Image (cartoon, rainbow over all chains, first blue to last red; front, top):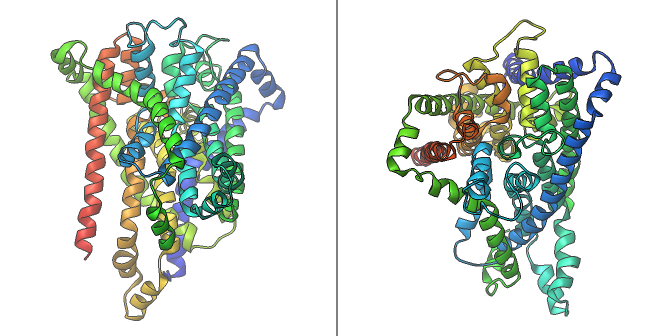
Length: 264
Length: 272
């Protein structure tokens, strides 16, 4: 649409102004506040024993949840893109459920299954207020990402090459490793990046099931909340800055991976 | 593309998917369906009377009503501004546009608790510009606007890129004003994308928790949203009541989502 120049500039100012007020200025202020007294204090705040233990718990949980959901995601995408079966629409809807359910409800759901008096309340090990509960919550909320990124790629590349491979005598395993996986690798990578970001940043579901025991079941996002509630604003900002750096790295990975998916 | 689709359909029943289907069904059942089934089933553990009294308490009704209203408001605002920003990113040219484009996804990448803290830094008690809206309903709206910002933009952008400019040029050459072209030519083509982005934004807003925790103050009858109310019920050891409110929250947001979809169908029919 050819918009007159003054109008074009007015629209640009409104749109960018909205982004600035909502996104850029608040983030700028946080970074300024975090680093206004130098990097030393920030470093001290993110290397306290509690912070290190929170960071390692977050990394551990992510390292369990993401590989599991990647394997599931690729298998499920294969089923959706290549398989023909009844109930595909139902499967599709169930995959998207974690996007639609409140994180608090996810935590509540796990308590109702694994907590005191729950359906599976008397397992030999503790789930709720313990690491297994945090892992289950994190897996739940990151279920859809890899499936949703890989399925369209699989549909796009089709199965001509796989069929050719099987005509030439490749078994299914060979054709998966040599044909299918290389052609979907950027889709998988993109899905993994999104999953990692979501797992590291999860707060609501984890906050319900963790019990928030310092040094044991406290993740990085929970530490931010605790420090804020304890009026340790500088500490909260420092931990937030660490999380924000991870988010920015994610963003960078997203923009570099995304264009490369075209030549996959 | 169409030959590809045909090819897929002509294949014999998909064997490569069999293993995937089995594993997927098992995984989804254990991880997603079992817990959600527990919420639905156990919401009536105390009987229907207890369910009803949990969801009809004044505080629950007030939290549910505020959640729906503020989520709808945030969705509408971001549907308008999101369409505008998508238009700027596709049709306008200025320096730093690619950076702006990449930053749109920041609310997806930033942990929600950090989002809340971030908004509080500029619009809270320690605000450098003296604007303090913390613990007000406006603060909740602000948090929801932040976390739902990318949905409509990312839904509209690809449609706008694909949109045929010949139609607009034809309308202009026939003497239509810029405003007419936008309202009669561009907007009708964008409506399905705007609505699907808005639906995602609404679903996200209704359940939002992390970004609201710090900024809302959780004042009953005022800034308490449903997710916070559910959280408080769990904390005061009332998981069954919490489940009842969760069920109602999910049903209500389902109704709104169906409404948004119906709006799209209605719009499509009246387009012809």
